[in-house]
Image (cartoon, rainbow, N blue to C red; front, side, top):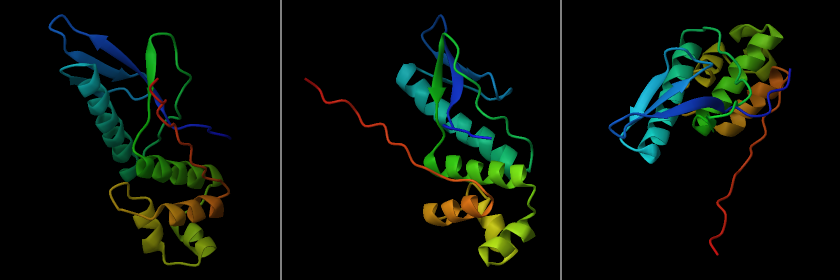
Length: 149
């Protein structure tokens, strides 16, 4: 199973008063708003971070991002949340317990619990090690801003 990008499609709906409501088709209940499009995008990132972190912390199923449809924008979570989600998915696909993953990493199970805690400031390299130990791989992708003319 290959996941090329962890970014979820969202609908940005402009309300009558100019506020922007944001919903995520893949994550029912993940709804937020902003006073303008820029504020709504920032709120959408925060909302996505919370929705994914909530599901990981409670060991719930996390749907993979579906393909973007017309009228939707892709919203990516913070890099650390995306890496934690990648580990969570890789571990579940491999059918590994925390103890089994810890054995592959040569560490204590408590470190695996910390790696799977989206609020713990795990090192990206250690998360990448854990993803590889679960049979996955982590690659970073950078979108640079375009130069102004």
